[in-house]
Length: 335
Image (tube, rainbow, N blue to C red):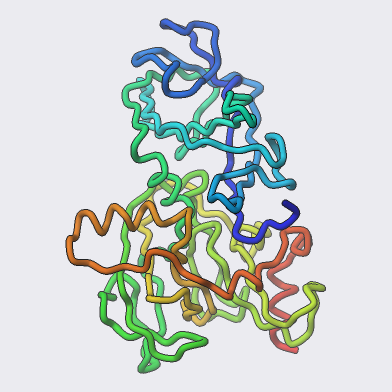
C-alpha cells in the first residue's frame, strides 16, 4: 500500500460536519443513501475543514485509502455510495458524491462528502435528488484528464489545431507511436470549482509558447536532461496540480470550463501547446464514463482498458514539494 501510482486524490469534507438542521434526521450528520431522506435540510458547520482523500485500487479492483491520504484509515475500503443533488435558496444546484469507509465486515466506519462545487458554511441545502446508479460515472468525470477549449494539439502533419475541431479518425502526433488516429472525443462543461477548476500553465512556464489549461490531475511528460528532482530517471510524469506555485502555474477558479478528452487505442503522450501531455487513460476509474458512451452510441468500439507503461514514470508528490517545482523542471529540461 506504499505506492500512489495510479492514485486519485480528491478534496472531501467529513460527513459529520454536514448536519441536518431541519427534517427527519435532525441533528445527524450526512450518511449513506439508505439513511437519507428527501427534503431534509443540511448545513455545513462553520469550522469544517476540507481534506485530500487519496484512493487507490487493490487487486480486487476495490477502492482503498492510500497510506498518504490526509483523512481516513489507510488500507480501509471505500464504497461509492451515491450522488446527491442539493439546492440552496440563493445558490446554484450542487452535486455531492457520498463515499463510505467500511470495515472488513462491511459495516460503515466513516462518511466523506466530495462536493463537485463548493458547499458554503451556514447555508441551508435541501436534498432534491439521490442517485445510486451513476455515482461511478460522476467520479470518473473527476478522474478524466482533460484539455480546455482552445488548446492547440499537434497533428501528425505537424500542424496545430484547436482541440474542439478534432474528430474521431483525425491523426495526431504521439511521442512513442508516431501517427495515431483518435478513437473518441469526449466533451463536457463543468463549473470551474473544486476538482474541476483547471490549472493554467502560463506561457514559458514549461517552455510552452501559449498558456495551457488542463484538469488538475492531468499528467505532463517532462524529459530531464539533468535529474533535478531526484527521481532516478530522466523521464517523468507530473500532475498539473502538483506544479501550482501561484505565479506561473495557477488554479483558475470561477465560471465554467469546457473540457475535452482525447482517446486512442492505447494510452499516449501527445503535444498540447508544445507540452507533452497524456491522453485519456481507460482504467477502473474512468471506464464507467466510456460504458455510458458505448450504450448511447451502439456500434462504437472503445478500449475496455489500457495497459499503460507510462505509470512507471509517475513522480511521487513528495519530490515536487518545492517552492517552484515548475521552474525546476523547466531548467532540468534545458540542461
